[in-house]
Length: 144
Length: 144
DNA sequence: AAAATATAAGACTTTTTTATCCGATTTAAA
DNA sequence: TTTAAATCGGATAAAAAAGTCTTATATTTT
Ligand code: FES
Ligand code: FES
Image (cartoon, rainbow over all chains, first blue to last red):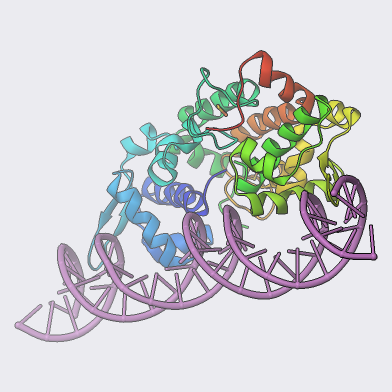
């Protein structure tokens, strides 16, 4: 579904947002520990998130990663997925045809398109704030 | 979503079924041409389908691949996906946690689980016969 | 000003997936 | 009975994804 990089990106964003809401700036090491991911690889992915202005970075001693309250509230999951995996989840034919369109559909298109719409809708309507909330209220976890 | 191998498997099964319904046994070369896939790799995948008794193979001159009408009618897409990609699509946590369960869910589980149920349902209810039918009646295609 | 801390960037390595190749085996046709 | 056609199985190769390492750069602290 998502690439490993994208999975880490989502978890890292949630972790960073959680820390930010508690007033703490975090860093690569904490994030990698917090989401159980390889540190160096996670650093790579954090750079993508910074480049797409989903999270903020601060270089130097005492630096790290941060996320604005407004971003936490307004950023939806789809933005992370698009940043890391591109728009394949929205546009790609599940059977690998070059074009996915109702005009020249593959045999599964008709059945799949509505499901994909629901998936994309849920990615769009779910904000980072929602996910952070779930982290405490419904006992959701980021590792194991 | 699916691995490339699984995409080829689905298309190859549909192609084989279509030929079978027209009374023709087909072979690796025809299949690879018919679905625009690499021939040798396709041969590998056909062996998986044979091993799982989704299609039939016949060795030797004039041999090739075949699919029984009963199988075409009763085999659903999920069986191909399970044979080639395993049960990840059903069981795997979308964020990569070791276990996907309502007991210890990741933050996206609650939103994702219903969508996945719809996806799996559509994979279960869609038969090869349905897909072959779509191939002609609704102008669906297997390549490009 | 120097030292320490942390991200940024790019080269490199490993693992997995995708794809190819070749020889063995089976079967039908010549 | 020989030959040709086809799948089967294993080894190998190439490409992509995942992951590591090293150096540069920026920032704070001492
Ligand atoms: S054409 Fe295959 S999913 Fe749309
Ligand atoms: S625990 Fe992550 S999808 Fe179920």
